[in-house]
Length: 115
Image (cartoon, rainbow, N blue to C red):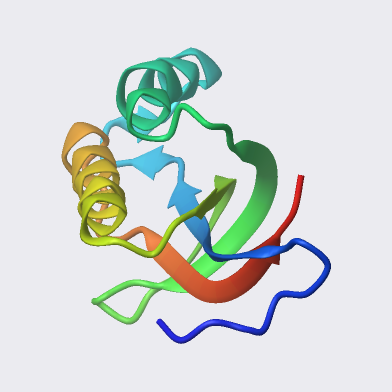
């Protein structure tokens, strides 16, 4: 991913926004299950930090049905390298399998970071 010019001591990075629906074929992802997923799957892959918030989402399934559901949005900022790409793919795959999800929306963009 080509980066932005980052001035004033900034460094290029990738920002990921991942959207996780919470309705499942057998009910919904509970807040406790979500925290467990964060602790077991996300944090070990991204120990530098993350932000997460609840949202009200809607999307069109493969069958064409519009689904409205509570969701979680996960924001990650990381370097642009193959290991980080693999970690993102693994956590998406894990969520889809664990909670029987058809999709996880991923939005990836270039960013500058400074601490």
